[in-house]
Image (cartoon, rainbow, N blue to C red; front, side, top):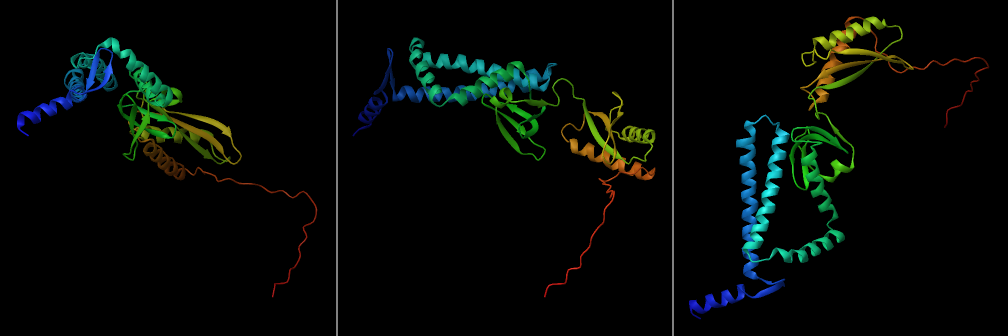
Length: 295
């Protein structure tokens, strides 16, 4: 078989109609051409989004979350427009897309509900921005920093540097705690219990001293102390402080303040009690019985 015959056979195979779609005929060459253009479209839109965020939007006054949202929405628009152009390029009339839409509708009804739900939730997140890149969030059992919001899922990195992929629908259907939604400052509450014999005014003064001596505690708003309740074994106070540096590592600030409170109370003789119970016997007799040891 000569080269010309081989090329003619390959051309015949590539142009063999696989599926009629309206007035167009889908061939193997059409599928290869379509997939190649589609991959190129995804690559170019990803590059364009990166350039837009890192070269253009970074020079604006938009925060990081807004930059990422604008970049993602712009990419989706380019993907939609590019997909329509590709369909026209490969010879598929857009009026025939009703068939595809019907097939997609059936697919969604039978097993793609989660994918469609996550995609729509991703668009809602990008437009409404209940969370954004850089936020510290808690959803379900996941707590961490949002580093990427995609079309289907959001990537959250924990303090242990573990990336958790969270479906976007969770941020719409479940309660979400956003530590940095509108203000980077966060108030922390440190519970403290002291014995009933303690001077409550001294306790208040010492707790405020601990807060003022910690460099990570903000001066404004100022720290304060609340006398919460008379507990079963202790007088319970709450030291409330504001911070914006340890939102990602709350335990570090809690630990530093608890160490300082312990040392300060020990220095001034303030007792931190443990649970106690008083047993009162009003009357009666307590009988004892000797039991011989077993053989």
